[in-house]
Length: 121
Image 1 (cartoon, helix red, strand yellow):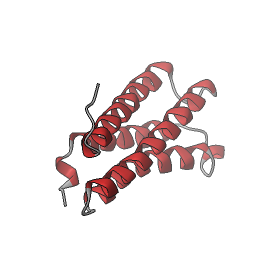
Image 2 (spheres, helix red, strand yellow):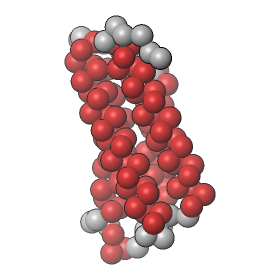
Image 3 (cartoon, rainbow, N blue to C red):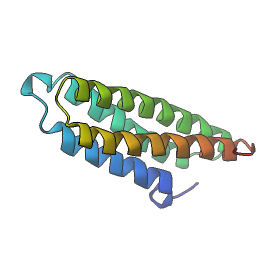
Image 4 (cartoon, rainbow, N blue to C red):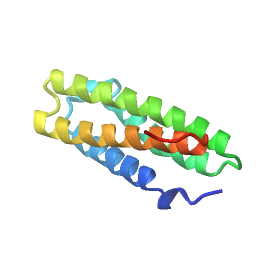
């Protein structure tokens, strides 16, 4: 069992979630139950799955939750792009959050490979 708050990947995922929440406050009110809710749930799922996996007893269980987190990261990346393309998110803010999401995804992949005992290239 690991302390998820000490994991750098969780710290980055948490920063991404905070950024998504802050950025989505300016989305139109008509998106409250649409894109705003969806992007927040996807971002929250990343850190939540890292935390849940950290509480598991085996590396394979942990890796499975990290895979789910990686999927949520990809979902959030698409929703960030959609928000940008709809004009809800300024390009510069999108680029910042997108870069952070890509970093989280890379970290998740490397961590999964480490837990499975494979070398990371």
